[in-house]
Image 1: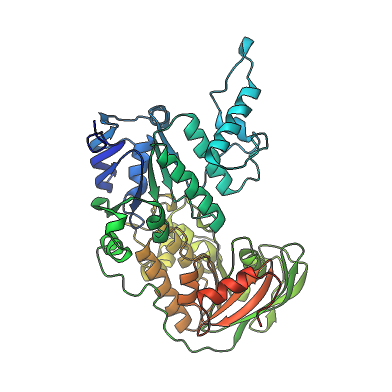
Image 2: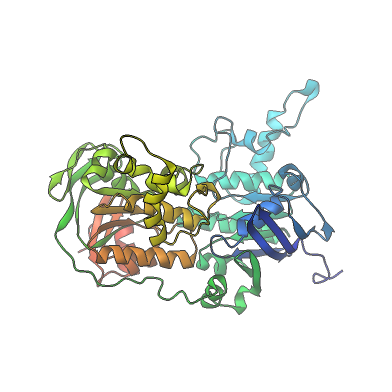
Length: 504
């Protein structure tokens, strides 16, 4: 049987899934062949995650066909999916932190010696062989606690190989990784492809899709749109199919009148984290903190807002000193912080949209100390409408929303406080291109209305496209302050990598 005649490793045809009245998947189709890396792209809410969870056995489809190596299957649990040779590597894997790397790989299926004693030597030897096969260096005996996201993903891949998985699905695996970690993951993915395994790669980063994948399938609004070889298509063509409309300028930054200094940071220092940090942000100005992952950007922002302690230095808002390590004082002074991790730090996922948006202004909107659901809904309506939060009702739980809508809810929550300074960390991390343009447009409008914005971003095009000034952080120090007219990819990266040597 030739390669073209061999049944696809994974095939979904017209798969449907609804949750009550909400249709999550109208017509999900995907065909992935062994020995290939297949990209699956689409806006948040396009149905990608639902489709993956059906393949993983988390959900059961309402209709359509699911085939594995030509055989029709219907997984009723994740255990059945894994036993059939399907492995899903999520953006943030969940390991047992107090167990060793080896124990996490072989959890529930440890090899035994006589008298049912666990053969730890055999486990460690096999784990070592798995990592050698993947070309990575990890100590099998070390505890999982403290491992980077990148290393946790490698452990999940090693687990999949030990189970002889023939289909691996990587769901946004690079969102929290540095450039070096991404390249290591890509090397592992290519080696798995070369072994004849089938890989599905879900990402919003088109440079990665074109660098890694052979084929790309586009979904929109719960339906299959198209499949093309990456060599035969372009980013513009994929974006047009994803959004079904003209996105327009992805960075719709319009000139704003720059006013007086709103935020003034002077001599801020935290031992071993950042040193001698000083900068200003003016009304109507978007200032970006750029630099490599681990440079200290988010730590600086968290210290300014009072989440993290600092050893010395001052933070002033509109000329008044803001007490350190007091987010409540920062909010009272007029600061707002949209954190990097929206699910863990910015959103109560089990609470409603209305409750989330109203959560920071509860005291303001309560009557005689009482706060009703109706009051929350009324307070949330204005901001939810302004940010075009795509929910059927404000009582929808945050956990059921797409990543883009979750981000909008977090932004709406903080804008409801009517701040004079918005600190926003990774404003478009993990959200689709259409929603990115909407968030960028909102930031530009807010700056035009006089809001001071401090933006932390790992995406260089976003930094260059949206910032009036770029502050580059390297090894806990600001190594450059570059006006937008002079900021280039080269100048930012040079300042981000040249250590303590300041640009001439």
